[in-house]
Image (tube, rainbow, N blue to C red):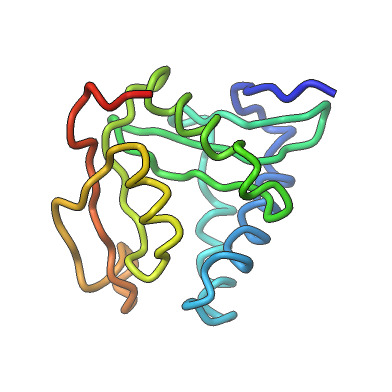
Length: 151
């Protein structure tokens, strides 16, 4: 069955939250369970219609999603069983080339994500000791080093 990138619609929301949670639990081993539950409430309350969000789908199943606001990747998540199969690259290319993304914030402790974004030409330009919620999870602010790096 064909894999497609589709604009977000409300029928995707529940599955997106599940993809987000499963992805975070599989990739963010520096977070404790209560923090994941805390962030899940925040993610569940996001109005995904308020900025460009696109879902990677196969049939009616959401495999992953990305959202970009003001040229910044605000979210890029894949279901854990689809990580490492080139689908993250598909979402990144879409975010960069179709949504004009040139910035991303990433948890510093998530070295796999830092490496992933680096492969696309993103480089750190700033760092915060705490995340946007004031929790002790340092954030690396990254930007495309050169627009010519768009893949």
